[in-house]
Amino acid sequence: MESEFLDWVRQQGQQQFAALNAARRIVAVGIGDDAAVLNALGVTSCVVTTDLLCEGVHFRRAQTTAELIGRKALAVNLSDLAAMAARPAAAFVSLLLPRDSAAELARGIVSGMRPLADEFDVAIAGGDTNTWGGELVISVTAIGLAVGRRPPLLRSGAKPNDVLLVTGQLGGSLLGHHLTFVPRVREALLLNERYRLHAAMDISDGLALDLRRLAAASNCGAIVVADQIPVSAAAKELETDDRPALDHALGDGEDFELLLAAPPEVAAELLRQQPLDVPLTAIGRCTAEPGLSLQLADGRQIPLPHLGYTH
Ligand SMILES: [Mg+2]
Image (cartoon, rainbow, N blue to C red; front, side):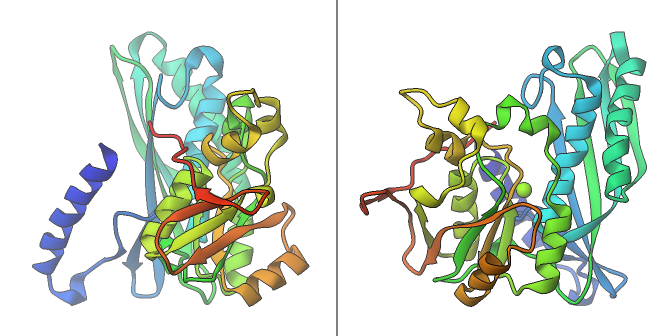
């Protein structure tokens, strides 16, 4: 539903913008990336992202705390800013609260956001609250600024022969990582400042699905090498006869690691220098031919399985 709807909105927007004078255009990058880029003040790019989290879809109150829900609602937005290599600046938080526990929940949610907001220098600059007879819904809009000499990193910049890299480890986020992850903001800012990357996104719905999106945006294909995918301990813990750890790494989602595309010489430098506190791993490369493949340990190439999390 979501991708068809987004295509429709994008078409509407293009018609609208076609009618405006080019000088008044504020949207430099619109729907379809991790966040939008606005031409703000003519000086710097303003990067805006928003996420809507619903009880029963993204979290269950019975299984977690209001504090962790609040933290996650902010963290997923910061992860999208990281995906664009934008420095977080402000967040707007809107809460639709179940009537029976509204005040307590609201306080818990904001208390949970506070340490993360402090850590990343994000001002909680506004929002709205309402109560109703339904379940908890949280909407967070986060604003970041492009910093340094480089423009925001997009999904659409990958080129054939670029090396694909990921930060950290993938899979098994359900065992806890999806609530406690630290968005890769510092890592993305450092990488974009020091290295000439071509494309980036955050892995929110699983490597297989998100790589498909990056490849589509960049108009290329990709080969992923199964043996090189950094499979997390949690993914190994969840392994069953039906579902190998690799499937968890490819499809569980909510890893909130960075997926990057870099020219071969830049990737070689990155792998040699390992400039981050988390490991950077090369997992494959972009190809001129469309389509996504998985290279198995015996050298065979199969289509990359359609794994990934869709709400
Ligand atoms: Mg994203």
